[in-house]
Image (cartoon, one colour):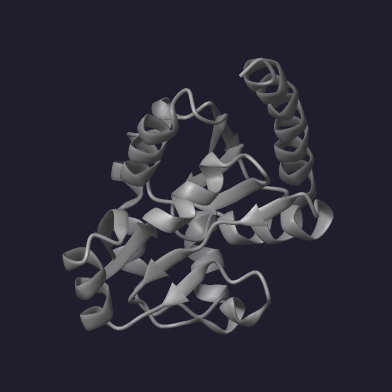
Length: 191
C-alpha cells in the first residue's frame, strides 16, 4: 500500500508522517528528490527528502530517472522510478508527502497494482501562517499563495482531514490506514 499525505505548507504533513513511521515499523518512507535546502526539522532519521543540486535534478530528468516532477515554491521535487518499483512489489507499505499533481500521477500509475490511500490535510490560513512562522520560514507569502490551488484538488483525495489537534488527526489517519490495509488484503490476496 502507498499512503499519500498532501496539504498546504505548515499543515503538519511531515509531523504526521514521522509519527506514523515511529509507531508502525511495517510502514517505510518513500523519499522525494528535491533541490530545496534542508530545514533543521529535516535532520532526523525520517527526513522525507534526498537533497540534490538543481544540476543533479536536471540530469535525473534527462536520464529518465524520475517518474514525475514538479516545481513548487521555486524548488524541484520528484519521485524516482526506482521508488515506484519498490512500492509495486508490495513487500512493505510506504508513506509519502507529495503535491496535489503528484498525487494524481501516482494514483494513476499504481491503479490495480497496489492499494493507494490518499489523505489531504487542511488547517485555517491563520493557523498555517502561525506554524510557518514558528518553524522559521522566510517565504510565508509564497507558501500561502499556493494554498487555494492545493485546496482545489482536495476533492481528488480519499479523505480530507482538518489538522487542528495533532493527536486527534494522528488517530484518524491511523484508523484509516488500518481500514485500507484490510481493503488491500482483500483486493490483492487472489492475485
